[in-house]
Length: 590
Ligand SMILES: [Zn+2]
Ligand SMILES: [Zn+2]
Ligand SMILES: [Zn+2]
Ligand SMILES: [Zn+2]
Ligand SMILES: [Zn+2]
Image (cartoon, rainbow, N blue to C red; front, side, top):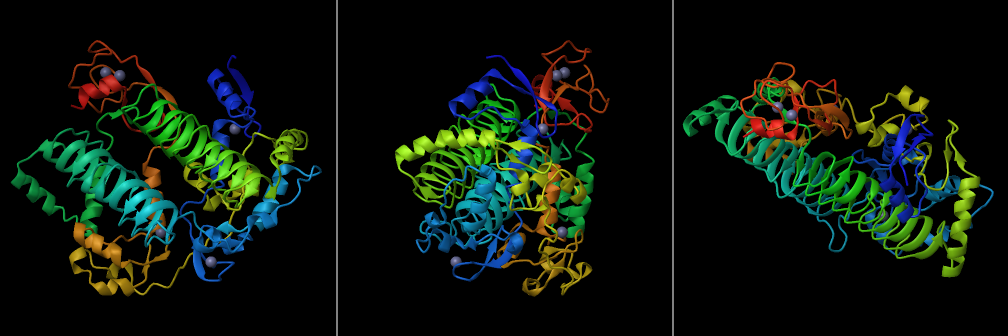
């Protein structure tokens, strides 16, 4: 089969379906998509809320709980314990398939009625997480607070997408046995570090970017196997100690000063076009131990995947917004441990399922919500194997003939993910906002929902920001009783006891911003999950912009001549970074 250019139903731009894509769609028994990859991702992410939590009550036991679903979403929400109990039966909500109505309309009605789990975590369940109530998309952990999309974790706070680590506070996309890291973005195997970015195997480092296998380095970029460096210059242990201590990173004013200086250093040295480690035949960014990946981001141990992000060990899958240890899955939001799961939201351990939300350990189900250990169900109604096998093709034909039409006239047939306008989240609650930032007006124009008022407390502060002592040493335990106000968004926030202990242990000043503003800053610092085709910035003896003078020998071109290499990079053309191909980069970063 040849490549085909199609026009996206939604944004009307061209996109290409390649022969191996056609093979994939055939293998998992779905028609090729009618939305382009970007529109598919945006639509999928409108169904994902990672960090916005609401206080509400469990609709079964009536206890007050936290949930990613707003109290005015109209959903029936059960706490984690009630939801997993046998006090209710999801099949009681089952109904006949109505061939006079679009499938997506019927499915949405079902979603509205079947109880949904307040948070996708295993807190307090048998052999589940311990003391991890404030978490979402989360499992196998102990003593964590405000941690989202994480597993195998201990003693961590205020972080997003963290795996196999402990003592992680204010971190984003970090994994692989890190311990005691504050403000790490893409930090792997780091120990006792603060403000470390795109770095591997560091200990006792601060303000480092793209550094590896180093210890006791401060304000450095692109280092390998170094010790006692400051601004990329070598010092003795004593000199280094003196410089480091002068910065007073235990004070808020010291950190602000260091941050400013560090920002000035970020554009002076070449960056590698992509972070790919131990990968073969792979295109994307931040991939480690991957094989045959196209358009992948933040992946480890992944094979034969395309348009997959923030995932751990999926195989042969397309279009996933987070997923782990799965195979042949398509268009999913955390369809973990599944095989041939198509169009799934928080549904685990399934085989051969289509259109499921909160369905677990089930096989052969279509258009269901909240089922556990089920087989041969459609819209939560039980069928025999024969009936199911007969119904399935009929429904697929019906979905093609009677599509769901959204308000902009886009048709949703079999093979498309759930329409964004039917999402139970507002666009501003969803992860789509992290990747495709829109104003309310823009979002509404493009037919996305908007949550008018996000729950947040303001004006209740008991302490003004300028009353907070500058240094951590001067903070006493009474701070735990105070209500503080974020200097950016004015939201009230508190310091929790576990957090204070961590700040004291690592000598970190109290944050003046709320978690949401800190998270937003980290998300903005990270490169987008998007690729541009660009050429190497090496002009021969210098970088194209003249900022960096080469020191090494570049194998890809004669000295004095520009490098001919091109690549796919997550550095957009308008960005200020100097971006080198692998060979030019390696020649400079020794
Ligand atoms: Zn599109
Ligand atoms: Zn309950
Ligand atoms: Zn804030
Ligand atoms: Zn080059
Ligand atoms: Zn070069």
